Length: 365
Image (cartoon, rainbow, N blue to C red; front, side, top):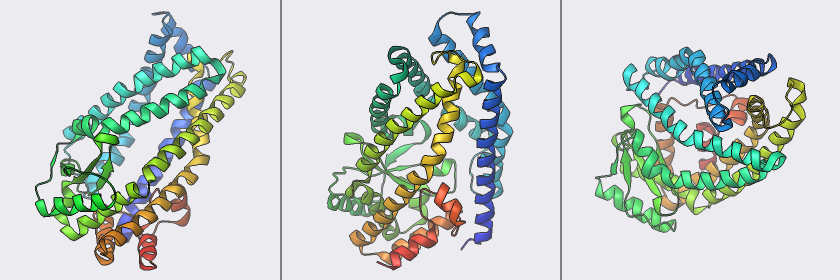
């Protein structure tokens, strides 16, 4: 068993620097806008081209590159140094750089077209941009969920069918009980990056997949893995995926509406004349951060509620409460999770209940 003081220290360090990065990023972006550097950058780019879409792309790349350079030391410390210090990483420095580069490239391939689509919607619909853009983001989110297991995940991991026939048959049977047709179960080489373990139910429609990290397969019994999969299938059986899509879509309409209104209200504060100025668009990020702060606790509360429900389904469908509790404890140790975080930290930041509360809930059933 891992000493929880070590896990608590690890998680508190990660949390502290995560909050610090968010606050510093917000302040720097505010200064960038308030002191007129945003306007100066747009004017400078206007000297090279009059194409607004190209200016927007270049503007975003410059700001993004500057952010990456400024926070490179912190990202190295939190994502590479700390993971090695606490014996959680299997990456060399070169592999860490390569994985980050792949992540950046995938982000650009997905993000830049969305950015251009957003600006097109902004130009076409003006102050009502939030309405069609919310609809478009719903469509995009569904498409991304469909291609995640078959296109995006293989960019980062080698995905192959699992070889253990007994485990495969158990999972297929569990899936049938949950009303899900599964023809195969997959594993991915999670160990190439980390010593942590995980499993997930991913995809939509014909791309639905159950995927298991090789770190899970190598360190857990068939009964233990079965309970983990039962938990993931619980999300499907209890329609958490559909509920999250519906709730996420409804909240995105509200969030984009609020951001749009706040953007308009604050234009004059920073000397902008209209919403179409590219230099005014970073204001959207500032307002998104502020609005997000208010929605985060509610989103996490709902996520924790769904986790409790999926836990209950796991022990009901497998009748293996002790195995599931043992698995949760082992996963918490292996992933160096904080077993008993501060109540506020759990309420505000955690999408999953703490292991202490999950076990107490399971024992109450």
